[in-house]
Length: 163
Length: 345
Image (cartoon, rainbow over all chains, first blue to last red; front, top):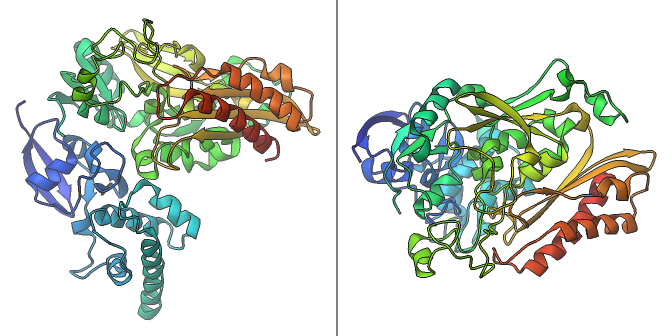
């Protein structure tokens, strides 16, 4: 099929790409833009390893057509660091061993960023429900809960310190 | 895995979408959230020449109640049902399941619909999936939702590319199960849908939309689009509950699902409705529930009686990883629990 020129806005930058209409957003990110943080896990819209934010909302990049995401702000795991340093949740993942093999981590980070942006003080149940669309095959969920709780604390301390 | 090649059409208005559908009708698939179509296209279950992406049609998004909406009507016996007021609430087909889950209006007046929407797949998939897509959801079967190689190895089946049924050998009927979570809730609410076509729009009760046959499961022509869902105010304020069976607690499709809706008065049931999903080729209302429960307090015995009616309505076959016997038994269990939960809520 003939390629078409599309314009994608990813992590604050606009990119002009020539892609087939059937190209998935995940492939456009990984192959055309070399943003390989988002992972292809299950390839059947289940596991959440490819989670990115489209218009600020977590979605599966493996289940979106790249051409359908034009005019929308796309954020990948490459775009979550703040002023060149790790976001609180990224740092907490490192501190608490929230990533084991690390393959699911980019998807989890995008989900957690959304959770904390919309609900800065989630309960244990709310955290578990929010993470229920991402799978970790190392099954290291406990460390993730610890990391998330510590990221929330860090954000609060940061806020307190900046006052 | 890459998708089959197609041309992408992105209309901005409903009129434009209908026009494009009419022009490319035999060989077009509609995409909204994509959570049903994209995995199926990967498996080469669909290889259309055109894909019509309707996400850009803003008029089909959102939940609106008309000025005539009077929620108390739903709680009154013999509420007046004049035509102007009956469909007082409108939900656009492109409203996402997450938007429904978080709608305070729906939570207050139509809790059963929120309960059902909140269980669909996973939070991320609900951010993408739409109400229209959940209503139009393709039927599912162990022998159908598989890769091309897998299906080819088994000689295909009636629903796609073949002429045999592996679930009921010897028959010529497809038994693939309908697995949408919101339609049983909508059936209990007596919802209507609007279907747009080149000749204009038509309204029909949702219960008339499904055929009960697995392959040709819905009454929707190739040039038609489900555009809106209407909820009657006569169903507002009823108590409801939704329970579903699945292997994992998230992400999975239901393998049995029960929606319960009831109206209480002075410690007894005034009216009740129960609908099932994922155990038949279409979502179904259970017959005789009002007769069985109206005028009675809802105790274990009454709930068990209704649960028996529900279990007899369920006709699960070996279309999924769990046995039909187990799924039917869980319909009984979930009906009883959902009734007690709704009555005591």
